Length: 295
Image (cartoon, rainbow, N blue to C red; front, side, top):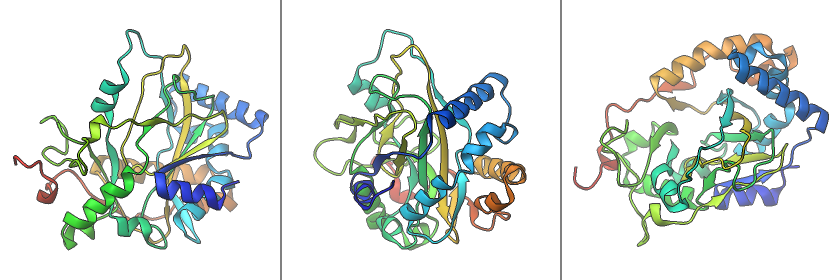
């Protein structure tokens, strides 16, 4: 179901939405599990219906093809994700994008084009329809390549060796309260990033958004009366090292052994049994190559 043409679209635009093999009955069970988790606040590994989705082989196969890898494992992103209804008055699109656009992953273009790909494969599994006004994420197609090419050009060899890493950055203006300040994403052409027009990642229930979060994207207001419901997983090729802030790394190291114990024996390999691949990468020390010009 994940075609070569869709892979090309991901590589060019940084995002693509694909179908999944889940039946209506399976989607109903998955949504019911999502509802229970949101209601009772349990950890995802305590909900059998949720674990059943996470260990479905389809996600692993998509990640293998996406990452050009013979073997992959989970990285992070297992909690039920909600975009609750937004109370009016609603914010206009220009202001939403200017305020919300950011990247989550810092990597070079060489990382992205390597085999296996040195990148996180992010799969957003939608449990209800996601039209444009139902909190559909906004994405700026192609921004991932331009931004990663910039990191290839400006970062030192020492810093390139510490990629890929989770490192939230945004274009100027950047609040001094932002964790990464004064690091930022510079404008690359005459039109500032915050003035570009993003596109909504619309989807039907049961589809999967494959996202490269090294490109600009943003959460969006939900003008519907019900929550947008998603299960998110992220994957990495086996043998690729990745960086996470300390608090997130600690959370992964605590969560993964508990999840692994809940998986069927033949699916346990999707959760690593060691953390040699996961290094700590926090917002200190700052990387001067990414400072705002005034700094």
